[in-house]
Length: 258
Image 1 (cartoon, helix red, strand yellow):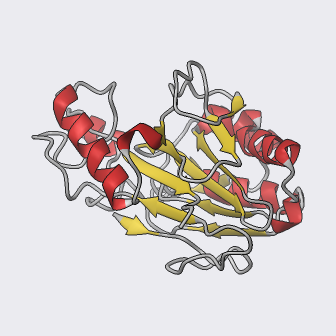
Image 2 (cartoon, rainbow, N blue to C red; image 1 turned 180 degrees about the vertical axis):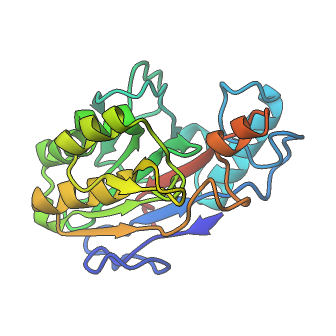
């Protein structure tokens, strides 16, 4: 696991947020440290990819313990590449949901990805956090702005919100048809790039960062790792190219009460 709790005023990573009134923590997991067997080895946290359910549950328990939480305090979504964002005060079924926000301490908000963008947002001054899953469709349809809006509805100030865009497939690797690239660029400016092969590509984190900054979000940090290039991370595209399946890594954000 990689601890990416940033100082919410600077957008840096690797340090704990100064608590006034709340401490905020963020974790992004890797493939290491779990019990899943090949091809999911070893810290798969996705329950819908064909892995042994007992192994997934063991991995989720390990994630909770690493965060200083009990397993029943992790909130998972049934992600559908949409824009629905839900305020939560406890774990529970969240069908058709790609974003969650809370003002409760010791409640871990989890987003699962394997090339899509995990968005982890915090306003430590207001004591409000959010997590969202941004694939191509969700990013283009505005999931990031919906997340910020839901945090604002709970009392967050966008100017005080610090966003981490976690590991995802990079523009060098994310090849798409030219018409798809144009469609996304139209609604998420800054996303269109060329791949390493000189073909049309998308850098969703680049577009999301620009969108969030234009919306007045105080700080946006981008984890530089590419899921397709980094074998320590899960990548749907890398696995598919090899005729295999793969697991899911997690982005986790929470506010410890002590």
